[in-house]
Length: 114
Length: 113
Image (cartoon, rainbow over all chains, first blue to last red; front, side, top):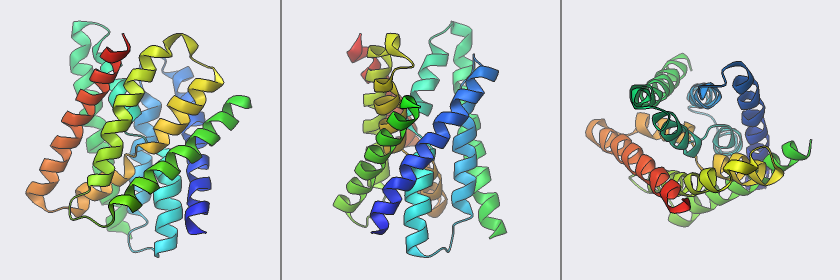
């Protein structure tokens, strides 16, 4: 039962990611800002769940936040930036560093607050 | 609206598959399940990103690329696992995830060309 709810929560998370991504793309068409936002915010939200009961972790953590954040899009976005021009290589490295650093900082900060 | 429904259906499928891989592997000292879904998902998304380049905005892309593969892979669990692992193992996990994830995405993109 918990797993079924988690799967529905994953669908809701994916739709939220899609809507944020579409809005971010209208505003910043050249850069994958949407993927960065959902990943950093999602990592922070998971930090708030430390110590939560197993059902909440499964539904909100594995379900909603698992569907909301994405690793594959982050990887493919990075190659898309790097492939534009040689000078975009540094921007691609920055995309990896900023999202990883931002996500880890958001998680650690949220975990410290809980 | 059709696109949102497609993202939701894909998101449910991707989430179910990710949870399934975790159940299949069971509790592990090293987060193999997340590493596997993230690397495999990056390869498949790389392939689809090239193959479906001219189908952007269709329900098929919304289901497969945005919904299913987006939800199959996860960044939040990756970060939580990095935080939970001790020093050098965390570094190995980050390095393996980034190197294998980027390599897999690249291989998928090249295979599609």
